[in-house]
Image 1: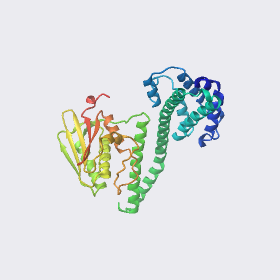
Image 2: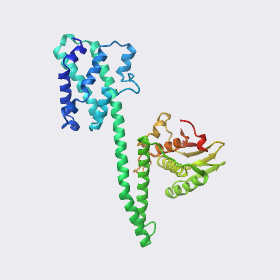
Image 3: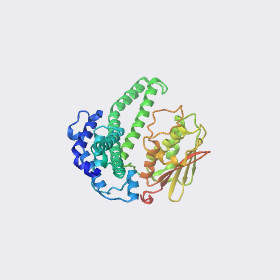
Image 4: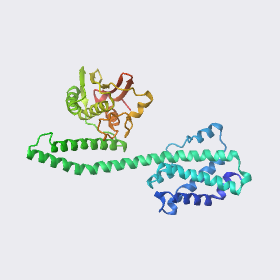
Amino acid sequence: MRLADFIKAHAETIVAEAARYAKTLAPLAHESEKTLRNHIPKILDAIVLDLEHSQTGEEAHTKSLGQAATPVGGPASAAQTHGRLRAKSGLQMAQLVAEYRALRAGVLRLWAEKEPDEVTVADVVRFNEAIDQAIAESVEFFSEETDQLRNVFLGVLGHDLRGPLNAILLTAELISRKTKLQPLSEVGVLIRSGRRMASLLDTLLQYNRTALGGGMTIHREPTDLAQACASEVELLKAAHPESEINLDVEGDCSGDFDASAVREALGNLVNNAVSYGDDGRILLSLVGSHETVSLKVFNTGPQIPVAEIPALFNALQRGEDIHPAENQTSLGLGLFIVQQIATAHGGEVRCASSPGGTSFEIELPRNGSTAKKR
């Protein structure tokens, strides 16, 4: 009996064994039989359908890599839905893949036991290709679902922490005013730490809004970025007295911008330069041209490999070479937020790195009407 026919004839036995294995996974230990079985019967149906149809060598290779084309805009496959539901059940990705390993082994072992003379290399290869494709589809949707669940969790966490943090800050500021304590006192440290935490939460919530599809909201108004950036640089110098931070302005830098957002982007870039530079000078340049204003931050330090530059703008990712003296509470969102601010303005951010140092440049259209179409 060929493998496709064998799977159809013994589908209930195969599914029951798969469900028994699923029950050994901690998140599913107390789930119902329906949840344990999930979409496994339909996954088997898809595999049988695949085995019964011919395919080209190129199709076989693509499928073995888990890269077979899936209909765009159509209903999710059984494997995709299985991955999404397993994520909601609390499985780890390794556990999801282990389910498929158990399914693969169970089918082949049962076939070899019951039909040892019918086992063919061709059917085994086709079956493995189909399983690999199902794994790829499940993992893709599993990852999307876990990302969404993580973003919802971060949003709830950030929102709920703001209340008690605001109460702590207001109380500390009230004590400071009543006792007239100096900024360097214990209460001053408490206030500065609270404001730092509030800044981290703001960044987290901004990321969360963007990741959940809300995009970053900016409020444009006539702004002279030269003045806005100069004010931010003064604060950055006070925050990093050990660093030499210099700003050079060239041309007219006025236009319709969200000054607060641009200042946040500048702060993130400078903090990044302090964290990953080699304690050299941090050079800032603001240049106004006919249609755009460009803000560049340069620091000396090790070269960033070209292949790694795109990943720098991924959310919740920190570099490995952070300065040991820097605060380890970084969320790894700085460059992600910078990119979102540039995009919201209709601009872009670029990174260039060489043995002499690294620069990040934000180019913003001077007016909203000239923003680049995306």
